[in-house]
Length: 167
Image 1: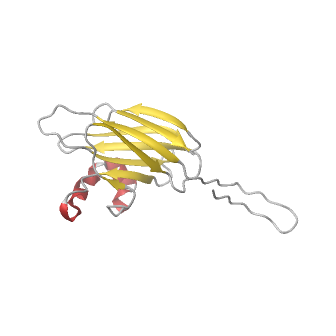
Image 2: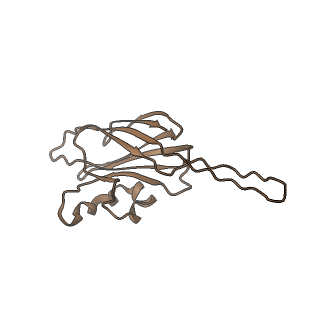
Image 3: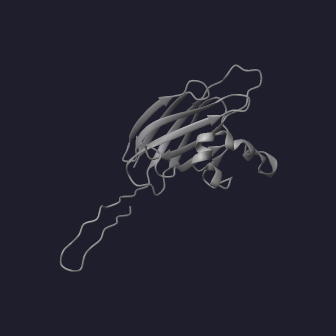
């Protein structure tokens, strides 16, 4: 936990707003639907948090892409997750330790994410998926890093998405 404050030595105390930072974890379940297409490819997925309205740069929590390709060739298509790419993905060096992961097969994918040094408050948890030969989809869940549960669902590239925030 990090607290910030100021104190005037003139005998008059001036209070500054305290910023409370605490590492929260998010138990996230993302359901990848099985699509009935001739050639199925697992989707690339970016998971990040941003302040509502997107006024501050987002924090990337996970990026799932084809890690198995030689010479890091799987990164060639990460820019197809356009929302994440434009808001900060293009500046990341992949693979990123603790963030990069392999794509997931159809079904529920469960992962625990650490929010790091983000201050307690309200954020949007954004899950974006893009699939070769398919479409792309963005699902937003309003979350509070003080704790709680949020649920949403995609319509094509993503199924049900559930986030349980623990302080």
